[in-house]
Image (tube, rainbow, N blue to C red):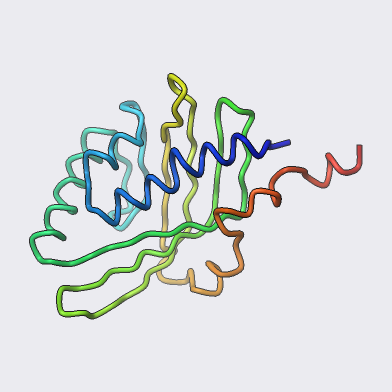
Length: 163
């Protein structure tokens, strides 16, 4: 069973902080959410990288966005949230909204699977996988997943209810 206190901590320390740093194109704040031993897989390049490579590509991408005057925002909805209070596995659908300097908008959707660990009383991302599944993930997929603030959906499983 996943407790509401842990999910609220994950929301504050990982997901809301992730969204804020992403939108602000703040590479330092964004990378601080990740453990230095983290692994990232998937993404547009469809590759596996460790923290140093991930940090460099993220920093360059955020700087490039800022130089062009483009904006980016990301939001998450969940299909699974499992935690024991020390480690967590969370899966779902993301929506990446890009706004070009000329005002043009584009929304992209994809799946994510993130593993986090509590390190010195803070949650840190230790493994992150994302995929756009070749454009087959849609706004409907995003809308059908559970919102970030829907904590009660994850508090009891069918097995817990049967006990």
